[in-house]
Image (cartoon, rainbow, N blue to C red; front, side, top):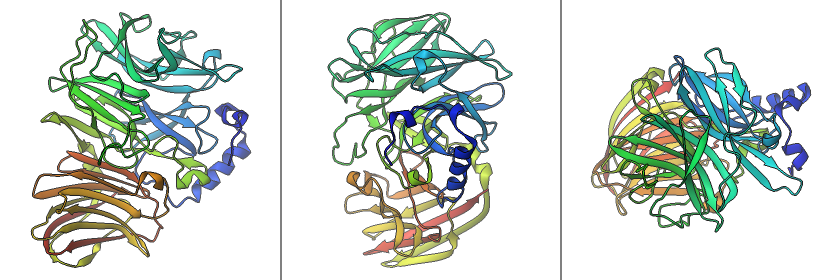
Length: 490
């Protein structure tokens, strides 16, 4: 379906009851609605925004276009949780109302200060020639949930030397000052991050470009997020325009991090190591972090990518968010683990140990479309050993070790309805340990795999038939040992 600009740039308030009911009916018939991931009621979800702990609960907003599975007039949709498991939909929180946000409320972040929640976002406006005008804006929310939108932007426009691709503010505090990073594009069409400072969260001045070792790394850096963890500085961002290289950068756009020394705020300089991708899977973008009440650094990402058509598009909805993850640093590598709270979502435990030689074995007790599973694999003499998931007639998702190349492989070639094939159907990454642990979360239309306690992560959407529920274990050209446990998700 081709959308006109008039159709794409309508606000939620203009939706008729008939339009809403039609979308709700279409979504209700979908085979691929998730059981325990955050997903839109209808329409398109993308970046997580404003992820923060405030007044005894987590607030998590996301980008939302209500009218269908297309990137149009963006709003912020609000969810809340006290336990990171059960999320309550609270409806549209931020919508385009003012002249400078006439074409959408873009991504941003949340920051708690003096008992108020400050929500920073990018306002998007288009002029008569369809030129983009971006500004950084602020909403202040009180403990009753009342939001007061500031009627002028806190940063009117990008500095000289940068294009209108200027978005996604993320704020933190250092001593008595507040700092903000904003994703940007230089006039020479290369990506970077801009750094701002404030004493009161309302009046901001530009410190300059955040200097890094990279001057030509993609054409735009989206969704920057700076924080310090275990005496390291970490700059998360999503660079666009990175060329594929071996097993890296295989998706249309990437997400990852620089790890280095704590940011030198006197010189706007970040001393860092090489860029590392956060996720080796097919569908992961625009991650954002926050801090839990007990001090853990938590991350949530968009389980999707821009400019890709997904099988649910025709049903009037698209995308979901990842499960929340705890992140840590070991040997200068970011590790991601599912938040420990998710263990409370387990039920109906099934456990088996088995040795397999040269065959595929189906274990009846393991099956389903929504479950958590931990599998320890020791390949022994097998050349290849692993799992077949969501197995059905002519369908399977493969997750295995290939000892000949010493790589973990996720293969969705036969995972169900195909999409984005121009970017390939296999993702793989090198591993070192002889015994490998797969900790995976299967939902109706997704898989998240944490390898060796989160050293490697694969996040991917899958669109199998409803009947494809089987789990199989296999070993080729030798023997492999498996220890497996599965829980159904409540």
